[in-house]
Image 1: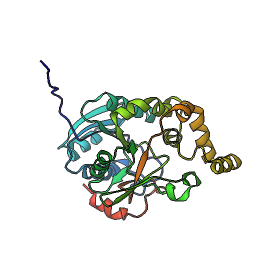
Image 2: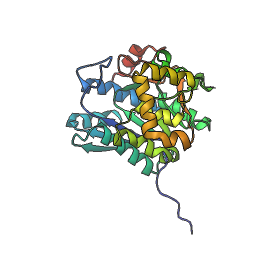
Image 3: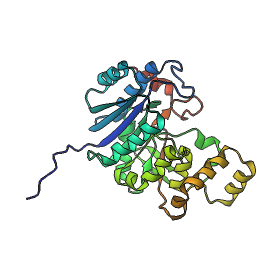
Image 4: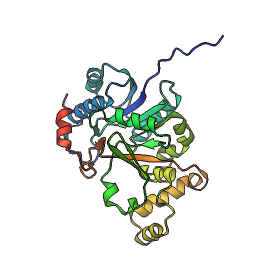
Length: 283
């Protein structure tokens, strides 16, 4: 007789990693990560909407008040807190991979970082899109300002409209992203180059999407300039050449307007009144 699984199924599984230091220069609370975290976590909660969600929180060297903060702000969700003693960015990213590949709560999964804010229902809208389009392998909620200003992003994108949002394929994003469990399993080794080889996030993404790696004009420009774009492409080939030559080309989608933004002052997504979003995200 077949025995049905007793594991509860969820719309989304998330691993959220956080540490008490401030990275780069955020647009809010640049000297106070705890106050920044209050807004970021409440914004994250508002982005989930009415979905059923399984959440793991990776607290790396965080004082007890951070644990209390999560207990207070996301108490209505199925949450597990996992504490680390300052293991660092690479180790917690590897732990995200390990948890999301081995969990059986949801096929849709999300890697969350602690310096993002979201529009209301932003993650719910992202889940609706990934479920609606079989061509979505990965997506980011972040319409990065880099897409509009950097030579690296001069390429042709696929376009799609869904529920008043325009979505386009992009070559790369940060390490906050959504995908499916089976796709993460197939690409696990590529993401692991981030920690094993100190690969750039942009470089590993470009090997996954294969965008702007073969255009002769781009290659000539990058080799002549030998700037940071050159280094990004060089690292992509150095560490992920097997994926670039032999691997599957995956689609990474980004929304217009943005469903969230990285809080780095130099990378704020255009087209959204983020001051208003921040105000609405006050706990």
